Image (cartoon, rainbow, N blue to C red; front, side, top):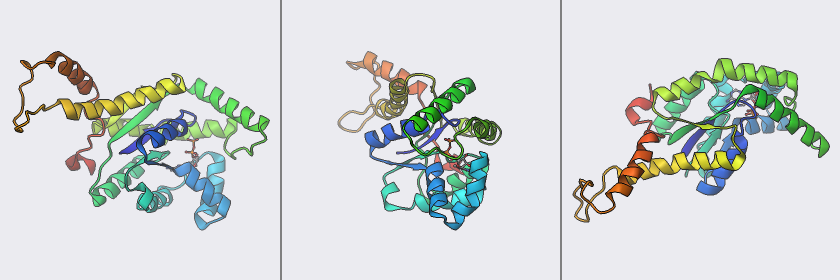
Length: 245
Ligand code: ADP
């Protein structure tokens, strides 16, 4: 399973990634976490990224693409991964397409968490207040001024990815304003729907021939499942021919 979670800062990508990691046994690859680790370790990448991140701007594409290219080659990412915070620009998405194509793999889907900006501000403010109360060191960019810049970067540089992936038939959106378990359920529904589609599209007899379906017992159930499958059709169907576009 190779997924992208797309959404503005504070949309809940990290929280939902953790649930998916447990359910599907895949790794969460957060470029924000990787960059923060690099800053902490004082590596050349970290030195380059530190001030840019503190201002809420985006680190250059080539830096982030190199980190991701390296990370998805690690053995623990072999079974799949959730990208959280990457891609964040169209050139990053194009680079990812090329990387996956070169490996002979493709994305299974792109899930957009839709949230409104007022709620994001409130969420980040309460995250800051909770961290302070627990005595946890705050992220350099978790303050209202920098958040405004992070949202601006999202609107201008990242939100075009919604159209980019919609154009490939890979985008599915969920309401990120719902409760955490409700968002998790919605995402699981989308992912199961795509599996259901694979099961229901071409029912076969034991001898391998394709069943018509309409005159079969249980056809009603199958057609309901097919309806769901149609709604969720194309989840993750970045076909090889289109992936490089
Ligand atoms: P957020 O909580 O805002 O979604 P992240 O933890 O994903 O933030 O990222 C924090 C910061 O790291 C970003 O504001 C940006 O400076 C940098 N960053 C993370 N991922 C990328 C990326 N794919 N491209 C460029 N910069 C990135």
